Image (cartoon, protein in one colour):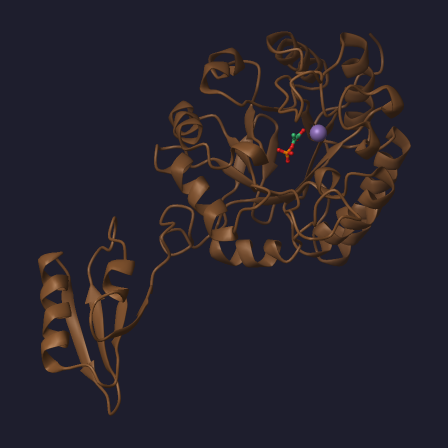
Length: 350
Ligand code: PEP
Ligand code: MN
């Protein structure tokens, strides 16, 4: 932390700030320039609200030097994290992982059809919601535990690929053990700190969506909550933020990808489905996400979207998903990467 004193600050005011810093355990590096005196506070600023210094007499501004996200940031962990989850990988120089499946698991037949088609087209993670965060309490809320069982069964039949599914409450965690490989924390729960801490204690990888009105720093601090409980397996997911624009469901903040990748070693993926909210606009954003350096994509697919129980308008038809995979692979090759391929062949029968 650096404290810049006002040009007219008195020696008493400077001494007062120094005394306060010393009381808090900081060493002080004082540099007196022609106009400004700058006090470098050397030590661990953990838990100290720097605004208390901004209000002290004679202080012009307080600058933070180190980032507050110690575990998610690159200073202690400069190299990219690579997460190995079952037979898939994500992060770093690994191939770009695609997670796909329905918004909600609706029935055994629905999941079987969609899971087979997305894995057949190259998805290496199966996504599906069993606990759904719906705006209306009267809308379909998900199949709950039954949905998780169906996800596991289908993923096991398809080469044992990892399952990604959202939980909204820590009480849903025990039922995920042995069923879900990546716990999704949705945009609405990005700052549910108790839930984040509980996920941190399980050790299961966490896919952390960006809150719809969250800054990048708030998002990284949410990752820090999970990591500070000992769980380093966090995947960040940009899924669009709320802006004044209404033409799309949200505004996909693609600029976040290079920014976040510079700040953190964690894998960063993009969800163009919830960003756009309509299937005819998802492919260009998926291509753009790959071009911008995303480590993966997560997309919703449905074979009968008009009858889907949630998010039908943004569900890609299977043939569109196939096209997305081909186009994104071409873009990936143009930047020296590739889409990850499933490691085992997909059975066609049963
Ligand atoms: C979802 O993935 O189905 C979902 C509800 O996502 P988000 O939290 O990004 O809205
Ligand atoms: Mn959805």
